Image 1 (cartoon, rainbow, N blue to C red):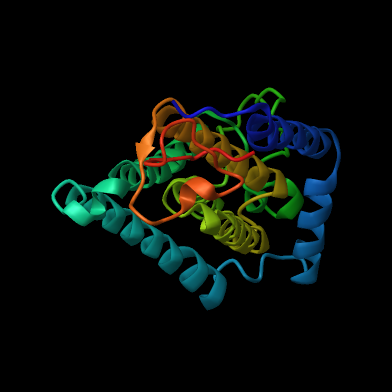
Image 2: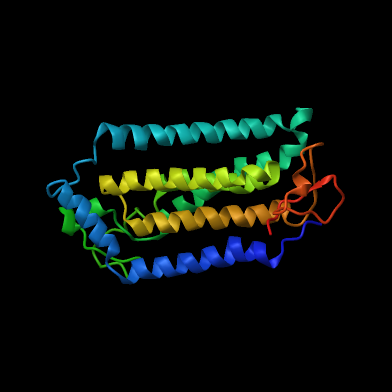
Length: 257
């Protein structure tokens, strides 16, 4: 049985959770969201000048979103193929993990948008819209529809790639840092894209990143934290100092010290 020690849970659950609570609390109680949005709005001469730009609207939003959907479809096909291709067998569980967890993170973000009342910046009176600014935990002002802009779905399309960190912790532990970096970079780029267009506040992206990270972590533990996994021969993964197995040398460790 693969054991995850206290250091693993400290680094992957406790510290990220504490950091999230701290940052979310500061953004919810402070004015940084508004200040950043004001800077962007004023830089555009009192408007969201990049809202319909080719780079930010067409390429980094519409086309990027389609590309992520295409990759999700390809991953699912790859997972199905792993059921029939012998060489993929050692990685089958990890591939299914990635193929299912990434869209599930996106689904959770989508559900969040349906149950919250937060508007996009471009819908607010402060920026030429029709609705008052209402914080996440404030009651909806009577007479105004519930907003559908929280969490940030497009940033979520990038942050779902945080699951690559856990996928690589299983398949190629020495590459897991690249998985983490890819998820962070894509999430930041997609999130900044929408902030510049007036579609989201910074806090929206923070919550989205947290949803994707903790969802990926939870399913990683469910899929790999309780059972040993056979390793491909000659990978040497069992010798990784960050990933130690409690089984024989044929078992791959997926936990980090």
